[in-house]
Length: 57
Image (tube, rainbow, N blue to C red; front, side):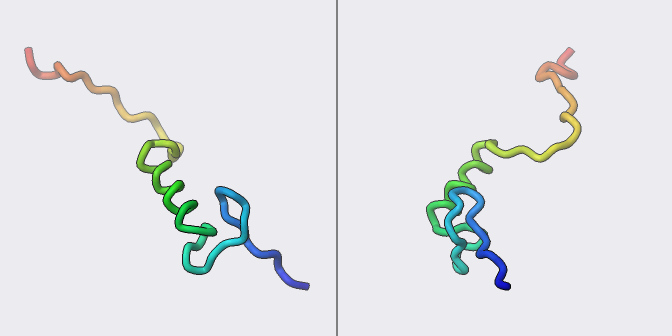
């Protein structure tokens, strides 16, 4: 019994060894762009709110 080929997490095509875990440079770059544009978020507590005027008075 063989294990099925792992698929690209973005498009579902078979992974490329050179671009793992993606199938191509295009999918790798799409994923990076998602991270850079805050398209992904890690769960956690919200950051404390700060005011721009704190300490000015």
